[in-house]
Amino acid sequence: MSDLQGNLKKAEAYLARFKRDGVLNQIGGEAVPALDGATFETLSPVDLKPLASVARGGAADIDRAAKAAKAAFPAWAAMPGEARKKLLHKIADAIEARAEEIAFVECMDTGQALKFMAKAALRGAENFRFFADRAPEARDGETLRTTGQVNMTTRVPIGPVGIITPWNTPFMLSTWKIAPALAAGCTVVHKPAEFSPLTARLLVEIAEEAGLPKGVWNLVNGLGEDAGKALTEHPDIRAIGFVGENRTGSMIMKQGAGTLKRVHFELGGKNPVIVFADADLDSAANAVVAGIFAATGQSCVAGSRLLVERSVKDEFLARLKRKAEAIRIGDPQDPATEMGPLATLRQRDWIEKVVAESVAGGGTLVTGGTRPAGSGFYYAPTIIDAGASDLPCVREELFGPVLSVLAFDTEAQALALANDTPFGLASGVFTSNLARAHRMARDIRAGVVWVNTYRVVSPLVPFGGYGLS
Ligand code: NAD
Image 1 (cartoon, rainbow, N blue to C red):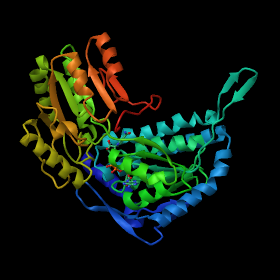
Image 2: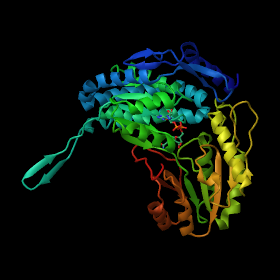
Image 3: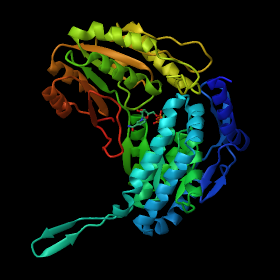
Image 4: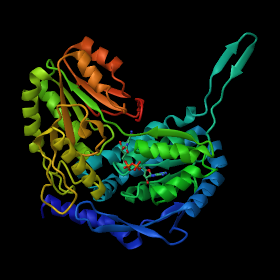
């Protein structure tokens, strides 16, 4: 049996329970369908066949879940931090023990390459461990002296929080938001993305099997415009942690205004990667290719705008083209696959439209711009020599495997192009000039500036951004 066949068999075995039982909500420790019995189907982006039927929660289900989270809050908030720490480490142990299952299920649901998903499962466990270790100090405040007085601040968990996550890397991102909320003593209602809901179900089960008290973590599946909206409007939910598009973030702010919700957002990006002529060009080319094409470009930190010094542009593009064309596209369950399909038809339609408009507007295709064979939502690694910075491929967050290239002549020009975006999430600088690296790191308006590397993310390092990010 080939590696692919073996993996497909394993994936089928892991998926059988979802095919049989569907994906239920989890409220107050019970697996339940939507109150009105509604469901929707989640499709495989590889062969477009239904993977499972999913409970389609609405406002009534959110209300039940919010009440369960509110009821569980006092005891969870009062639990000593050391006890919460132990429990969160137990959840991390259980994630590690089921990492293979998580990777296979996530891979089927999102279409992203298995080797990438295997790392994402383990990173989920790391997130739990990192925040577990902070639980004992979560309530600590400060002592502030003023003349004749000692003042003390304390920190309190805000209450039940709503967590709303996107469809790309859903398992890892859910752990990154839920683990800190639990560590702080908050209870949770999680609304995962409708396009990839399977591993959120595994995650809440893992947490309860590890001993998390009932109602501390509730899961309601459903669409953004009904379950998501209801969660942001619910008066018992005191804050929203959201990862997704900036337009959705803006809607959430409006929806939450009536109940004065606090919000914590991680939004999109149109991230510049700047390559100076004095950089190690081969290592930079590897980083640029991985930076944009990993996860089929469906990553908030995808380095989607390459700014390259004009004197090395032709040579650098030739390297990129060779590397992009060597990427192995295929079934994400195949251990040799480096790039799977896009997650949804909507994504591919949008990417094709923007690439066509950009080429019509004067951009030149260096490679790609086509659909490889296969029934899934495949799209070839694409590089566009954009020429002008007002093309849609340079301005829009595509969330796909499309790299737009602009040339610069001076450091000042490179900086101006890097900052010429309403986003400001991540960026990369490739240079052998240390002073220049420091200047760029100071002046690029992005939450992260990587120097001579890309996409190295640690839970220890703050992850945020400017503007629409
Ligand atoms: P999205 O904004 O369309 O959806 C995200 C979530 O919001 C989903 O669960 C969806 O159901 C929900 N939602 C939609 N409308 C809602 C509403 N009115 N009220 C409440 N919830 C609603 O994003 P997406 O397409 O799933 O994900 C891709 C986006 O996420 C990209 O912009 C990407 O850059 C961003 N992202 C950011 C980060 C980061 O850490 N900065 C990480 C991953 C993805």
